[in-house]
Image (cartoon, rainbow, N blue to C red):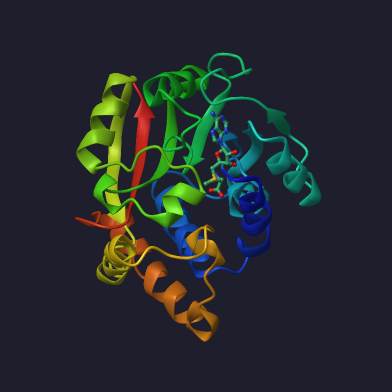
Length: 246
Ligand SMILES: C[S@@+](CC[C@H](N)C(=O)[O-])C[C@H]1O[C@@H](n2cnc3c(N)ncnc32)[C@H](O)[C@@H]1O
């Protein structure tokens, strides 16, 4: 990611509709497969500036976060996170089978992760047998745009592709769904328009102000949470997965 994007992320992740809506979706998925208070050993792989690990994820157990960017870890410390490591997702400094749950949100897709198979096998190694992995990744490579360049996204995934990667790394897929489905038509038009009228700013979508629409957009995205947890959604801007170590 561009260095300035860590500061942007830190500033907006407690209030921006996308983060709040995705938190609702992740909580719904977690609540389907585990329960708050379960006392799990949790790894947040590529924890960024720490909002997830210091908020709802901590309801499910003790969270350890790591990121390869020192700037990200400094923001995590400002949030009061203590169990932190500076590491790459392809070379984890943790013992085999030392976590019950690993989450990794928008990390495997990054340019700095050249081989997502190596990263998935590393996560599989540090999970206990039967341990779960929850992933969130951007969907559809044909939707690449300015946002992807600003946050250094190497690849956007399809559901089928992610299923194959998870199986090859020794996981059994329990839920694989698209998300950000209801807003997909608007987002698709925006991304396609960027090809015709390239944006002047080089920042990510997080720098776009939506003003009073923030609450509406959050409600629309959050409304997907029970559907994704129950059955899954057939298309969207994001792909989410829950998988279990075989
Ligand atoms: C888009 S941010 C997502 C941060 C956080 N997971 C979240 O959902 O807010 C991607 C994060 O992945 C981290 N990252 C990228 N490549 C990595 C690697 N090889 N190992 C560890 N972290 C990495 C970046 O530093 C950044 O913090």
